[in-house]
Image (cartoon, rainbow, N blue to C red):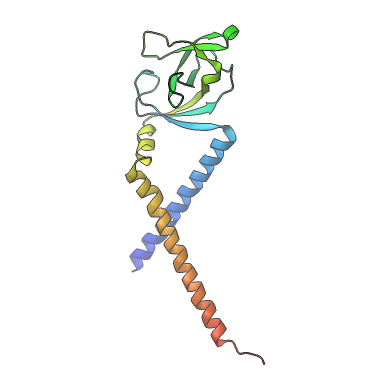
Length: 176
């Protein structure tokens, strides 16, 4: 029983630290307009590899500069993001052209309005972790089980408090 209490205490501390880190990251995302991207292809090798994670900061129209690695929405599928290096900027037509570092041919011109953001950091291998966290096992282990544990812990605490308050009311002398 003592070992179980020690494990439970350890899990509560770890859960608290994870929650604190998550809150800090979500605050940073909101404050600095950051997003995580998971690299799917090798078009930007050797700059980053499939399975890496990128931190992208939102960028305004016209912010693309030659040499920047940017993400933009595909003109064919607005839900698809493409992340390549800017090779040319056309200010007169409000567009730019990109190319993957591992590719021989540049992409078609992209309108500034499709620019999603600029890559500010590369996290090698973290894309695999992000992918796993979005899978069912990741959600169960990292979200559902901790949420259930917190809920059960709070219900047990509420029950103990209720029984203590009830015994206090029963033993209290009444003044008439």
